[in-house]
Image (cartoon, rainbow, N blue to C red):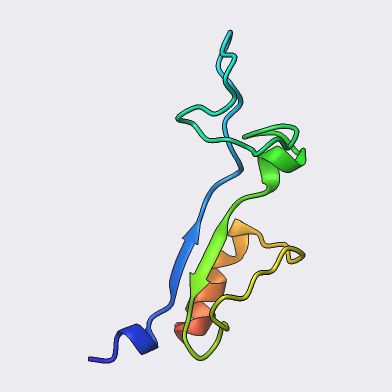
Length: 88
């Protein structure tokens, strides 16, 4: 079917890790870990706004490329995906 070569696959997380629960001494909880960055979910510090974003799109995004400078917003996803799919 050629789906592998013609499919856009995206993995993205939302708003960083949740802060440790009251009295919790281990910052690595089941709610995520900000990797030592300040802040967490609902904060405007790096720990709250940095998230993972992985994309696989053969012929459009080079395999193995790492980008640590670009910024994205989840608000733009619907219009972006519609434009890619050529849906008005």
